[in-house]
Length: 279
Length: 323
Image: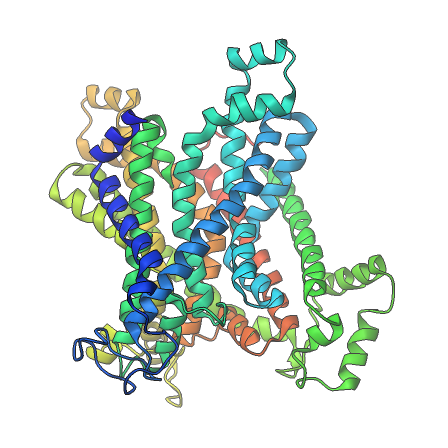
């Protein structure tokens, strides 16, 4: 563990990424407590340019709502959706990949055809269709993102398990009569973890991009403000008020960049031999 | 080669069939009567139309029979009727398809060419300032949401500098013909294509750079150098050619993302393609049209994947497709 932090902190991208992530989480958790301005309430005249009033530092949108408050509250939605949907994708992808890799043969064939099928479907189009049909809400958004993002996890885990299965210590566990579940959970998966962690950090970034794109198209949760929704709302008035679209976009850019940097840092720290497969 | 193509096509057809079946169940996932769902939200449809839909899809019959009717319809390219647009779905999609193909193929070409170019430069000058600059730019472009890039492009090139038109396929009412028309369309195409291409350019840049650095270390490159070949020849004929393999794979994998990006890009730039059609269908909750576009998008991805497989074989003749 100590070794891990040491190499993580040695990689510049890892350090920058960590700083960005910690800041983003701090904003998401504590921001709404420090800035009680509701992002939905009219606080000033509409189209107030940024940097004119200290109470509304980033100006107001077409309905006089505080852009800064929207960005603070939007961080919650982005990070929450990013983390939960990645977690959900792992919950589907890891068992599928582990079973395919461990049992091999027909199980492997069936599971991998299934995975490939999901990988062929254009993911964003499927996410749009799913959210539209299930009606936009935070849970339907998380579910849709999870549905389109688990296949790479399954493929990665399968590959790892496939190579670990033949190792001597696994064979030893088989000989001592351990159950398959025990071997997969206790012997194999812990050793397959590091590439999965790297992939997961990149998946959170992709999930944030997906969520913001859905919200931009009007498929966000109608009760929660999000960065994508703000950019979408500011789109029609971009000629009069550039700040409504620019600032939330910068927030998305910085968080996604931070997570990608963390992914790179983790990759260098956890598995230098796999440094090429980060993408 | 021929059997390989036949095999791949057969596999593609099976996957497409599975997608159609998925589509069938998706409609039934929506809350409420599928006929009403297909007709669009309440108010858009009248009772007669809903009844027609019910009869057409046999919604009173058992589920397997319904599925059969649905698949048969799609096999004959009958994707249903859009009540909102008062036109058959397949007609609507076919009208819009050329614009989407123009946009996605241009974006793809730009991103692949620039990505490989920048990636090659970065690898060639690894560790220098040029390499760092390219890497940082690629990282930033990789993290930008496409809709935001599109809007920033409009802000910069249309609103501030007034260089490029901010929406549409051609100048409305100009009735240009011949070369003037081509130039007009090209002017409208630049920003959407660049927007869509930028993200993929970043991906290909990173991939090309990493891949070239890896190939460079291999023995056959040392041999080439020992033979006294010039650096330019080694880079081009030996390193780049091998380094392109993972890039080609990636291009195939990304075709679905490219289509998804087209939905966003076409929405922002009012580009009259199937992505924009999907957005309109979304706004109007026109589920039949939405699912029709979804099926066609999936078919496009399958075709693109097939082409990538063929290209891969051309780039790397070592690969056997016996299995």
